[in-house]
Image 1 (cartoon, one colour):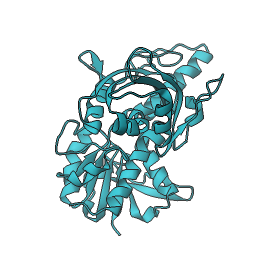
Image 2 (cartoon, rainbow, N blue to C red):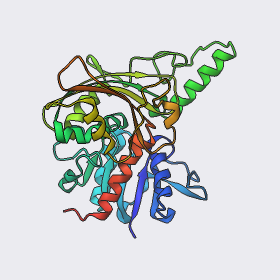
Image 3 (cartoon, helix red, strand yellow):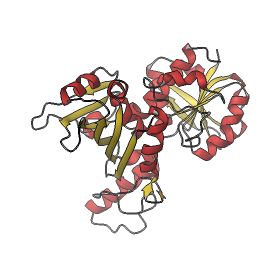
Length: 337
């Protein structure tokens, strides 16, 4: 049996992809763990009982790989994805290496799986976890009512930046409690992250940050059409999770009850909206959860045919890795030309 290769397994979404594959009983012998320039002898856990040797991507031969998942930088993807495709593998790219490439579909499972047969280059890309988190609950509304405009404000935990970012938050927090100086403690973020909110996620691209740019570009690539997106993205001092306030303007008349009914129909989306003190979901509640949680549904009085919601999810697991694993299953179960 051909194997699934996961590149970038030591942290982030790559690690969560391994966790989900293990939980779904994919045998460890059918999974290959890879890192660029991995040191000899490094291993990564696979489920509770197994470990995988981490192999070096630089010398790896993809001939026995059916699907290669690149949870790595865009530079790594551009260098090694063509080699995987040339060896016969299908590639799932989690970076922004191919954003805007008309020949490489960007897919969110359940929304536009029908684009997977159009993998002309043998590569499919997935949007950022934050963009997937926003789009998944809205998929039925996009189909039935059309979406004209989305305004989203995001509050991202540091895990999206990797282990070094989590260490920076931990160390700064500890030093503040210990009344120690924070000299030379800003290596990942441009401002102190502990007990702070930073209005920058990603580097600046003109007026926008990379995260804000991605919301616009990736939403259009997934949904198509002329949907307009305005994103405001902030980094918060939390380790895991992504929370979003989302305002949606639809092309057809819709009230909040209909919006709630449509969102409830979406697989892996949970509506928890009690409209009482504490009747909503927070980042603390969603850590390790597979679902995307929606609360605070309200009519938007500022526009016709509009509503707003609060959305929270485990950014690595529910919003990122889950989409990738769903696409893996689709590719395995469907013969694509």
